[in-house]
Length: 206
Image 1: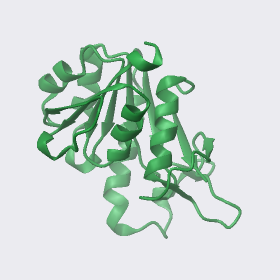
Image 2: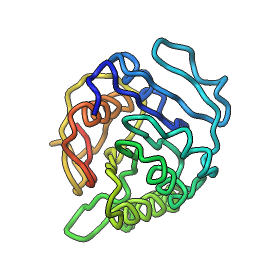
Image 3: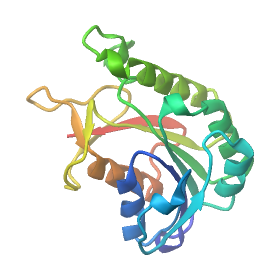
Image 4: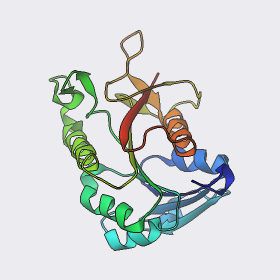
């Protein structure tokens, strides 16, 4: 891993622009990949490049030479086999995935996505996210990390104050399970700078 101001991160960015902002603000060189790179806001330390989430060969070339590659894409619009394959073939230092809350446990062996109260409109996305995690857990050599947000994952404030967990859904004393995009980005950037969850899933919440 490079020193902080030399670290090169490659983000296949669709959902979470705060990730780009957080890493760039820390002085890291960020390659932001998108189907329409012209839509990525110009900022210091960020280079926008075109890429297709289904183009394994192209992603392999884009990931190569970076300390870390981060997938922040909709699971239903992507192919985990191709994404994992691109990360493996590129020999990128680390592969990190913006996960979902659906695969977190609410009781031993019981995933959130399986409970009756889970919103039907999000179930297919959550199930595919869980399948992505299951595939990663079969990898023998890839240095992967899967970060799941809490149940409520929305724009908010960057407080830098949150809790980390492993496979269980985090809830506050009022029973609410939440994290802002901004604090999620802080947790992921912290993990890149100070690796603590190699070949593992962890979660973040208030």
